[in-house]
Length: 92
Image (cartoon, one colour):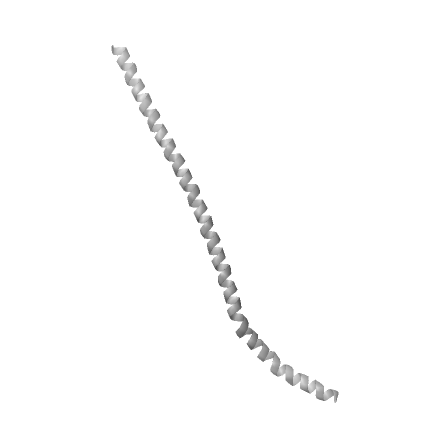
């Protein structure tokens, strides 16, 4: 009797384990792929947000550099006019 139960369990396992494995693979593969796509999209979105922050910082830095260049040009023009007025005062 015990041998019959062991034989039935062995036959059941020989058939059940491969069938369960194949079924799990078929059922779980789309789920795993979907999770992978979501994670990849999330990483891509985080990278995009980081890139947008970097571009915004670069734009701010560019605005600051433009302001500095404009100020340097104005100072240069001021000193040029100052030198011209000093020459005019020496001559006149």
